[in-house]
Length: 415
Image (cartoon, rainbow, N blue to C red):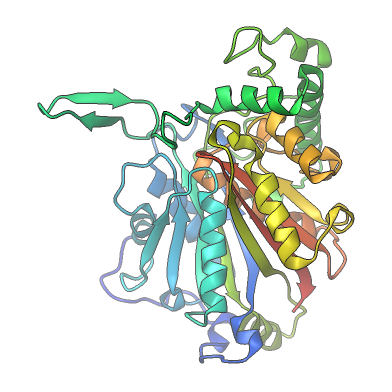
């Protein structure tokens, strides 16, 4: 990482980013656009990133984004990062300083558990919409490998260690994620056969996408890792069927149709449409980006937490006039914590689950909690750049602990 400077620096050549620093009051000045995105290859917890704390993972992505896009770092209005298992403090601020950003650039850490990374990006987009600024770095990071031990302090001062935070009142039910996945499977009638088939397809798609270079442009090699660790080439229906129930005796949710625990980070550049157009004018190029359209967050039964994204997407569809038909023509990335929840959400939205994650999802790639929502947006940008038609809609959605969902709609446009 770069050394932290005691004063603002401008070590990067000014480009079109630098050309649009004035305050904009028109619609273009308050329309948010995702212009760039990078992520680390997702690593298995306890694997290649086990010696790196969360802020170090995020700093690597921040540093790469700043270097690649040549915008003056002192013009960044804020660094907003999601994180779910950290020990407090402000990982976004620590990551920004570790990456060598000027001390004047602040940082904000968001915790909406698995939805934290997407929430951070939506927040940056809302700040652009509000006219608060026109250049943000937003995303998420998770280091399950180095997450601190947690404990409640009793009245006598002794410590009672716990594995995870409480997300709902115990009297209403606060199941672990695996139990909740079993609840979703039972409640919505998602069979083991469907779960295994979907999970296997995720691995097949991810392996194929990696072989075709679909992840290359978005990945930053780190700690000797050049590709996502999770995708498994040799899975077969027979191997999937051999996995025992992982959480409930006789259940349908297994290690094979669940995501692996992972470390990772993803960050995007959020700017205004006016500034994006200034980039195009200064470089004499055509600039494409994901224009932020709207977002919705919804709560649902905490015992069926995996279904949350269906509720937030329904709200978003109602707000934006979408229906299942329009959704069918969009690029869609949905976090695959468990195959059961993916299938339940697809059924609730009345869409083919094959619409989701054309390059595979978290079942294969991994689920670095706080980063996963930002990975979804990174993937949408990469997919759009591979040839999506101008005007193509893009949707990122994720279900969260405590029974919630967040969904965000973008549109691929020439700016």
